[in-house]
Image (tube, rainbow, N blue to C red):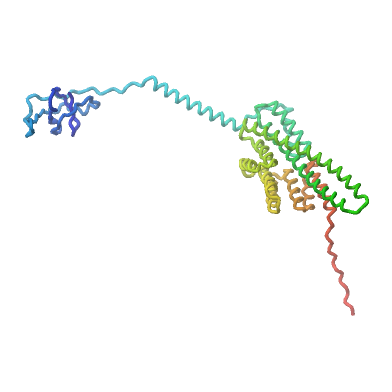
Length: 394
């Protein structure tokens, strides 16, 4: 059997014999130890006793006492054992390595596909489609209802012709959102007109004029027409904003980086009262985007219609104009803020500026007409006439 020294770890071979474990003196370090457990295997060749003097087996007498002299039979010198060779790599390890390499390649491919999805590969447009796209972008900036409908029709055509270009779908959604917002503004103007008409009917009914009944009947007919018009405009606004939200979501699923889709969804959320969603999309666009500033102004108008809300809304609309001076909708919005503040002369100035850039803008036309009529009904302040100096009397 093999035994190992406790101090220098040298290994020796002994003849196995039954009975008490032998007491062995190491031939290398002279350590005397009891070989209680045999060494089952030797993994390191350099730790064998080798050419050192073999250890002597010392027997202790029964019942204790001093150790006996070395026995006549000495242990055999340790035998050099061959060092174990490292096992060869199995086929399973090779397949594991190959599978890891494939996983890395697939991960890199997925990352490249995601990056390409963030940046749309623009298809080559035909010359007629290029001209249609340029015209649609110009009409989108004019912001009146007729031009917005034409722009939306052109973008819808391009989206159907180039289904792998979601930017056309996103711009069509933006045009639909602007149309719906214009209808919502028209509905608000109709509601204000109905309130003024109700006040006029009440004042006419209380008057003792013999023609009051006829004027009240005529006002009632006008009120019915306004209510019917208000119902149609409100339904149209809801349908357009709904379509804009759906198309924006489809475009964002195809390419999450399309800003026009985020703008369309943001405008629709602000117009339908989902102010938290509108603010979240505005933050997604980041600072420096004029539409984010414009929607921030809309949210202030919805949250606080008092002086503080109007002041903040005006600041946001002016910030949008600072980024994009040609933004007609922001100029029109400033006129609406001034009209709510009952500063109709300043409102007239903003509406005229918007109409100078877009003569067919329906919202600016309605605002200018109302501002002029209210200015005419407001008495002008008395002009200060300087007093003429009189000559001193003698």
